[in-house]
Length: 245
Image (cartoon, rainbow, N blue to C red; front, side):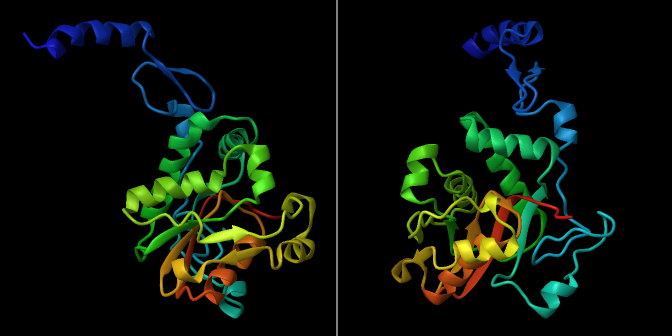
């Protein structure tokens, strides 16, 4: 008799008793059947695929409406083609990201990576030549311990079987956190804060990855920097898109 046949009833009983149960990555509820999320939390993380602008992610209309460019992006397109994101930066999604970034909840890495992959697969688009994370300054990296954008990008690069350009972009100034500023102040704060390596990005179609899109100031500066270094096309992927009042 094979060892798997011997162990199967024992493992099944252990699952039923909760002895081998995992826990929901959000609420810590026991998951007797495994999986990263309980049914309640999974229901509160819907993938947004319609009723949005495919360039900036602005959400309007019904969720089942086809993506359509908003008036702002028709008159002043961003320096990228497509913006992919999983959902709004609110509720469970917001708690997941904040816990991951600021409270050492690194065990959420695989879950957030899966959400990013689902967002990219939800809408048809071009496959990038390489994946580039939005970088942290060295001082911020030491303080936080890891770059959340790099970890999300790592999973996407693996899923797409594409190179991960860890050093494609670097941050040249340790800017104050963008959350302290309004739109105009964010643009001024981040201007000239990045440099790209032409040897890595020239002639490539790139997927630029970050965790949250708020005003888009950081992503715009990164995309422009990549294009000045010879990148021929940029798409952007974030986990969540803030809805501004």
